[in-house]
Length: 310
Ligand code: PMT
Image (cartoon, protein in one colour):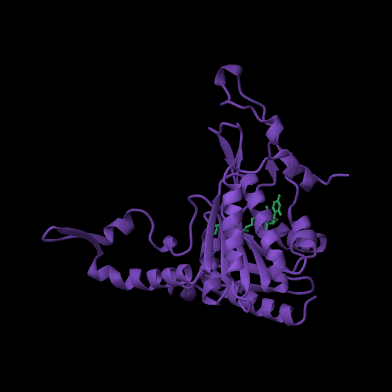
């Protein structure tokens, strides 16, 4: 009998850029040296289209801060990073220079016939360190960024990345920070064209998305260190839901967070223990990001797991 997750892939055709993205992932993985660890970071929310020719969609909340900041800290810890992110959500390095602020850092310089664009002198100290880290990661082939928009694009990319990561065994860490929708309209139940208001208010019936953590942990990357996230708005549900996910999928850790406190508090829930990371107000004022602490703990745990895989 076909399982629900298999059914999803049977009924949702591969995205147009799937083969191209799969090749990018394969090429990237082939160039990761034998001693380097690798992490897949997923980031941003998935969109659920309401029409095949999509004008409207239901979205999942996520700015991509967690994923993009974590990707930078994993690079600092010498990991190769595959960053799968929602198009237009935050990206590593770029996240430091958003919108108009970035243009305000630049100047136009004319010398004779030559016109060039330069970073203003008083902005060099903020641009240079980020640019240096970005260039070094890219030139060394340690960072690959691939975007998705819809749930289906995300799930196809997730599986393609896992197929490559399987060969890394326990060297691979999966850090599933994307906010993945639990509900969707199956492809064969979606109207082709934009829904028309003349037809009256539509009744939209969403179905449950199969939980991909199940095949991911058991079949796709059975030897990897898998970390999922749990986002709740009700503190009373947070730890029990995280524990429930661990018991069900049998992966290594759930990082539990509450929507409004996620930037300064997370709980790392493991099968037999749990620990909290809380940023003090002094740390927040000093610009310390909670992701630096999360990644530091994970890197230690991942190293330990590689020696004593359980
Ligand atoms: O991006 P920011 O604004 O910084 O916010 C970060 C965050 C709050 C989005 C992040 O820290 C977070 O909690 N991400 C996970 C949110 C989420 O999707 O939780 P969930 O309870 O719906 O899913 C739990 C896990 O199951 C996730 O790791 C997801 O990858 C996985 N999942 C979800 C749905 C599905 N159909 N299959 C899955 O495998």
